[in-house]
Length: 316
Ligand code: PSU
Ligand code: MN
View 1 (spheres, helix red, strand yellow):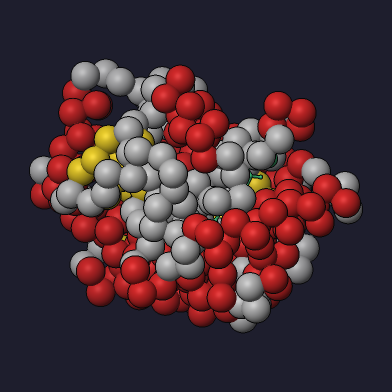
View 2: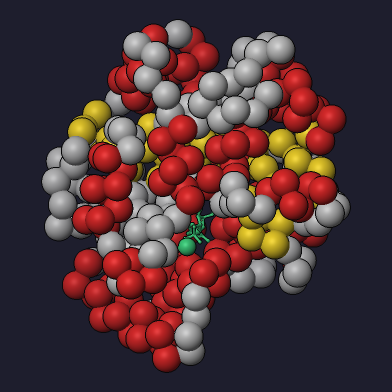
């Protein structure tokens, strides 16, 4: 039995709980490039039908680039690596889906539940299936006021332990980006800004913070991942890919909306897993949908880069 030391999970014992969609299984068996996609962004991050259109479009972008998309979710207790169009559409329409991270993915499996997988849970499932690259919008991180709430996303710990490349647009600007970067550094996670000296801030191309590391090509990202593995360094790699200029909302414009959303969350005593979905929905409302348009654009942009990285890794 090969125990993957990064997660203490074994692909062998997990296999009975996992369904790998046929095109994904074929690609993995042939060593072809595969890109994992998360599904909390579908179940909790965007409203229907925008979530459904985004999910379908992102898969198409990955296919057009020459890689195979694998949207990951838990449906009726089954860990799905790749969804059929019908499964993806009904997940997008489900109202009662759970939000699944490391803490609750096994509960959903044991209880036969359905849920969207966060960055953390998607990394776990991708790794079990042998997928090395994963595209998302933004990772979870250290929330503003974490010194009181202790709200730090499990995504950060997962990045420290599970060897998957996560292509994101940085940490959402609703988070404390500076503290998020500090935790990632402490936990030994390389943060690579793609083609930039500055860490992006999700809806905006620039945060106030310098990029810890910078790389300008997909090949170099693939090489860094391979080098870390060769050196025996555990864990993932976070790529922060700035949203295209034509789609960005400047930091100054977002700041007011973020503050207002934060105040609303406090006033309504929103806590725990509900915080991120609440803030995203509130900001969508405050920006009259502009934040959603940017969110879709940056996920698509990340999918394109993730496909290039997966292709580079498959070549190596
Ligand atoms: N990015 C988005 N929308 C989302 C998320 C990211 O544009 O809904 C999700 C991701 O799944 C991420 C999760 O892993 O939010 C983080 O939630 P939390 O802060 O509760 O760990
Ligand atoms: Mn949290």
